[in-house]
Image 1 (cartoon, rainbow, N blue to C red):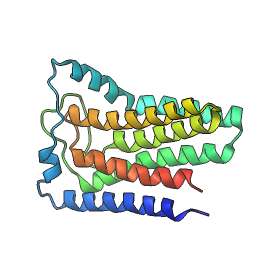
Image 2 (cartoon, rainbow, N blue to C red):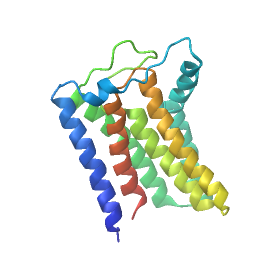
Image 3 (spheres, rainbow, N blue to C red):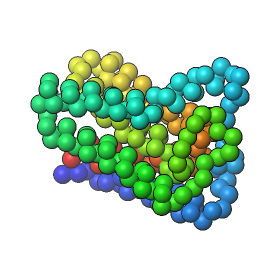
Length: 196
């Protein structure tokens, strides 16, 4: 049975996503997007750092990592239901992200520092990255015995998720509301996948 806290968490994430989607579709200039500016100078050290972090959220990296997780769950753990849940969940999320982007059709910011195609809302890096890294942390926490390693896995994935979102804003390929919406929908999906 799903606990009320998890139901509330999923509903709050979905509500935040729907509110952001509604505001973006209204085509008004959003205060959060104009107030927060994380873009960096291309000559700075932070540009190189965020460009590397941005790469970690790309489809090729998450795809390769997903294959390793599927092989681990399938061959070593023999947890076939989790293999199916993980595979369908991650692939379905990527497809859902594309459909939402095509429905809302928000243009990306000007002056992008890295190449980005398609529409902007919601951030696929934030959404899919959150799901992938949360499930990876969940599996590590579930498998390791030492409490310190559990903390490292949880804290490390949390900060990496935040950095991937920040990198998308620093590279000027997403607005803050795109990233926040990606986190909200990714959080709802992750909660639902992991809590049964």
